[in-house]
Length: 236
Image (cartoon, rainbow, N blue to C red; front, side):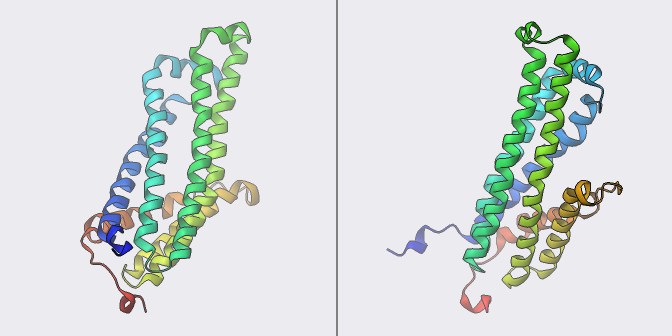
């Protein structure tokens, strides 16, 4: 029996990638744009600790929202590999690995939020630190989460640029999507390296370029999920 019998159809991979992207698009903004700004007051450890203690369930929900997002990234990496494997198997695998490296960094970073929550909610820590010291420690872990996660976005940016290039070259996905993904990746790349190379420029480039991945998600869900299998004639 031919091994291709067991291969995942491209339309199925497209649908899975689209659904996983949709899940991350819902979960990540809930945590990043709603919960964290609501609870975390920059450089004000006591006020931040008070907010988290008074809204412990909301902060916990944010942790699980981040976790769900990063799990979706693993699924997306696999589904996009399957989707783009006919175009270039080796490059598709490299693209998947870049997203997986980003995801591992993000998951390790997430442990900082767990540690911050444990510091604030475990009474025994008060026997080791003064209250203000404990709050300061928690704030450091909260900041570490962002620092580590944003560093991981460097790999995510490279993933998007390479993804856009392969989409552009695939011949069975609209080329405009490849261009938009490259622009999105460059936006994340500039946002990641800005604090190191251009600290005086306070611009979040990714806020103006993120739409490329959203448009790609819509294509995966609407058009990609109905696409036909490709053959060698389509790819050349």
